[in-house]
Length: 79
Image 1 (cartoon, rainbow, N blue to C red):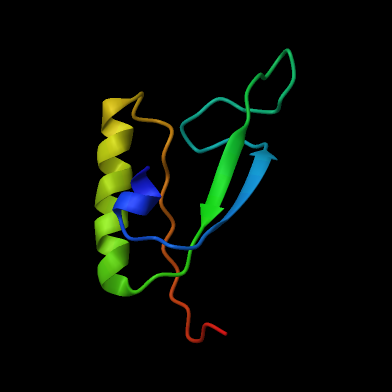
Image 2 (image 1 turned 120 degrees about the vertical axis):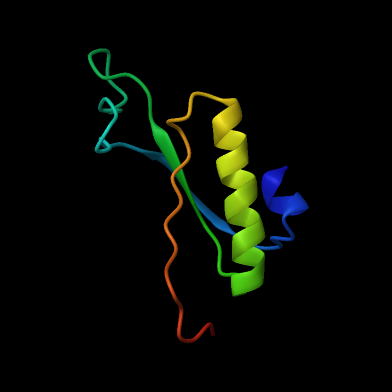
């Protein structure tokens, strides 16, 4: 998958999660607002983050263009 090919060896995933994005319909897991989302978190070096971000956004362009969002945060310490 994308994580493996981008050199990511560890990650945490949450799901299903529900909500609404700025430019998307709600995904609430109901008949009125069907669907759900997943969250994947990983802590990787900056240079690996560039590769992963490019791979994720490239994959998203193949699909609907709405599904993948990337949030980058700086971690001062990883224990």
